[in-house]
Length: 470
Image 1 (cartoon, rainbow, N blue to C red):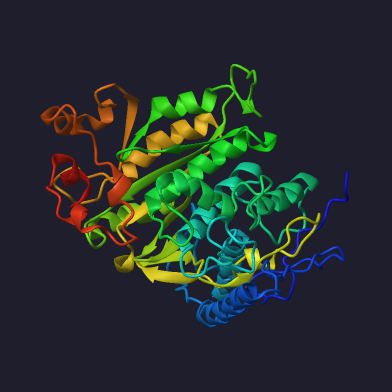
Image 2: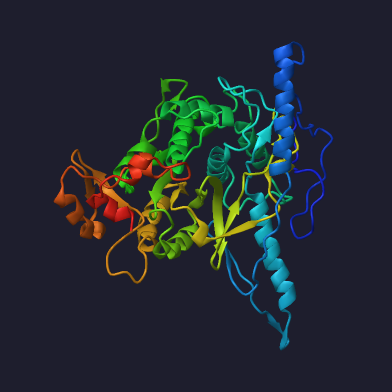
């Protein structure tokens, strides 16, 4: 087997960000090539056109980000972890500055360890389109990649894994590079979660390269891509993806999905009686009409404090990002709107600097688009059971007369609808009014980061829409 490479991100970083190990000599260079031949009149014109587009994209999406500022007096939450400044009294003296720096360094170490997927340029043309960059249209797919990458890090490494740790095991190093290879920007089976493969999966949803994707479409693309990869890669055979339908997380469906036999290359595999696959739960929801209903802001904050949360695919209209935390009334997010060259992920070791963001960004809750997809990951059955007990308590907006949860949990699903558990029995009246009416389908309405058709805006309101659009 080849020598296990050292994890590195290359280049120098500030002390407030992270301390990088020395880059090994085997680090590969960033691939920079044009897939279009320079010979021939038409090809020369296309090459010149692509160069002009790249120059424009470099100007628009290559300027970098202004760093966000954080208040030391307020806690910072990042995917279930809290970083909080407090006064530390020693010998009746306050040595608060040293403690504050330590706390902020831990936050930055955690933030930088999240995998960052951005616009890329000069990759092989996407089949059927000729596009060699996703600048201007691929932000939702990149946000989806970031949420999936976060879940894969949870699954193969752990929530507390850090890129700047000097005690990585051989297994951790292997999976770190392998996860990044799965997202390589090329159309091969070795990169099942590449932009190219995401676009191919999206064709079944009537989406093509260059189109705008919404949170609901993104959730379906993640599920279909993982389901396809499970049958090709043994390391993924203990992972499943569940997409909630009509704002309902059905426990029976998840248990059946996580305990079913493993399929590898089309061959049915036997599984032990206690087999349980880690589950990624995606919940597409819409939290308002044209704007986010402010009653759900406390709920969003509470969700980001859960250990099982892996992020929220959302953003502003026509501007998708991945939310991973918050402080006070500002969301912390990873922004894919940054144009970078592709990376050759084939060598055993390669430079991973461009996969880690060193500048956190913040956005006001009031600017958040109401359509989003929330992601959770549960490694074991016990963790899933704990999630089902804890999550319902944070889904109800506080100080409201009625019951308007973001989404609900159900024990099982019947042929006529959803059979809700006892804790959600107050919602049975909605189902009883019209037996055939389920909670709102988000196939069309949740993709509001795209242009919403006029027909969907003017449709008649139903009981189910009263449940979600408040």
